[in-house]
Length: 336
Image (cartoon, rainbow, N blue to C red; front, side, top):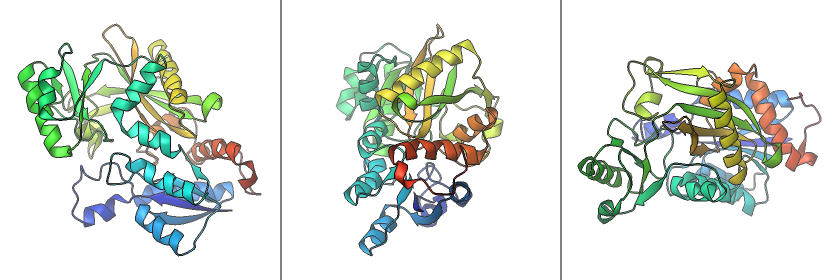
């Protein structure tokens, strides 16, 4: 069985002149090679495709695959993570991870919070600033936390994200509107512990893989797990520790699993949870295409802490995919 791999390489975009922050969500050759190795170990024949434009060219040229491992984030548009799934749907090619509807929804943090809140999942009170005139209408208690509504990898989160008064709110909101050209999410600030929850599976079969806590170190920047804290040299700014057995973390896992199911996420990913001053966990955001760089990405850290090797992690993801498409199971498979 041939499985195509869709992805965006960070080095490609850096070579085109994009910045380190512009390309923060994109992948390295190390990640793609590791995914290919794990899929080959499962009995698949992996074929590297690349991003949306290369996928389009290949499809027009008549190339086909039995399935696609969609790891493509996209560069442009508020629904960019839905572009590859939409194209694959049009060609009736099955793919790993969430469908186009979920991908489009979950990139928009405000719409995502509307949905999870409607399903009873706790999330911080929030508002949206779409234009400068909206700033004066924000009526939430300080401190507040601001970030772009549709970015990942901590982009736009920095030392100015937490604001304590209207003057700072206006300055940060205007800066984000100008820089990212998209609405700004405003949330009541949650001052408690922060957890990252790894999940594998789909719907009722979804399970918490494990949980880590984000622990700031001396070099931590600002009040959030932003780009500066995640990028090169992150080891000096943050410690990622196993937290699966902590009572507070277990409650965070329950919230994450409820959000995962409410959003109809599939196969595997990550949900960020932060607690309020009373230790109550709240949904922050979901990453339905979680990083998979071995010994570097949060989901891989979680798997390692739980004794799940990289090939096994990919195996769990593929087992969920194959439950939807059992006829695609390679004849030679290694159990997840």
